[in-house]
Length: 207
Length: 99
Image 1 (tube, rainbow over the protein chains, first blue to last red):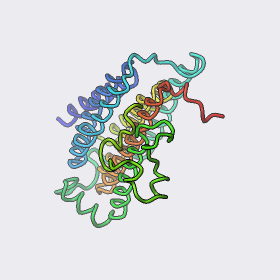
Image 2 (image 1 turned 180 degrees about the horizontal axis):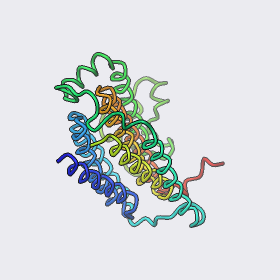
Image 3 (image 1 turned 45 degrees about the horizontal axis):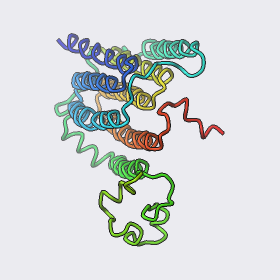
């Protein structure tokens, strides 16, 4: 039974991956990646990584892909011809490179002594991969990685807000820059009392 | 199922993602292909964690998911900034930094 589910999920994952690369409209590429991620969550479940499968569905399919869909809808990338840089020969060279990489990885995987692990893998215990076990590990053995990941997420969120802010130079009096903000301390005198509102994030309305 | 099957699927997905990054020119699709490659790495990590019978690989996969989320946030912010400056959304056209 596990074999049937494995092949179904693997075919779904590969079809989703090929669709992501081959479909011309970025919107359909994102939807294809959603299919790929759901199949991958099924593979995680087969590997007894329950918490990871749930996190995959909630974080990736639920949050990150919706972010992608919003940006694709905002930017409005229509039909995008698939062509490599320079001459069309480079496209075939790219495909050739990917094929060579797969052959190399397959040799690395199949040519080693991985069969020693046996059919069902080694030790498996009750509670393997459950949220409780993962949470215990995150708060004991991997506490430093956990905290570093949280700081990284904070930095990325602040960076994304600063990058995506609407601006085209700083000549407008109500425009604020981060360096200016740090130097002068008070934000109200620059933004005219709109600090912390969506008007501040959006910048001057005429741009 | 033997562990090798999962690793072969992971290698295939990784190569499809690498080929997509080389072929596609739209930065949005390039970010999607990066996601493919990161997820292939995740699958290999979880498969090895299962083979060894401990959960450290799953923690590593979780951290990879966090890094992927950060990369998406910054990458999409860059794409929105590019779009607002009326620049073409094509990695071949954006060559100001090339000198």
